[in-house]
Length: 78
Image 1 (cartoon, rainbow, N blue to C red):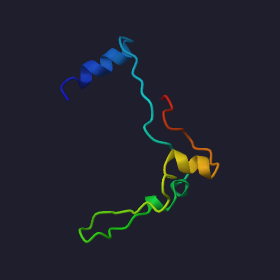
Image 2: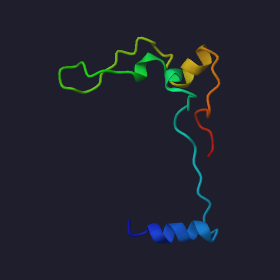
Image 3: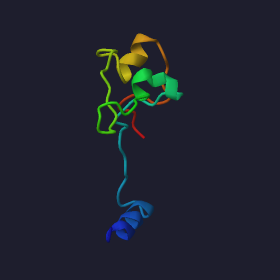
Image 4: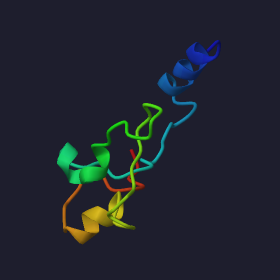
């Protein structure tokens, strides 16, 4: 937007220190996320749909269950 130049200058001159944390777990490969990542359009409208047969073992809980080490964990400060 119109403030992008000012924002970049603030970072370059040290007036602000941008930071954030990742909102999800980063797996090493696509297979790290399980089958639910491989959805197919199947609801009659062409939109992806998943039934989450894994129960609660999605995202970071799946990594814990299968003892996989992610690249970055949920909440990692970048």
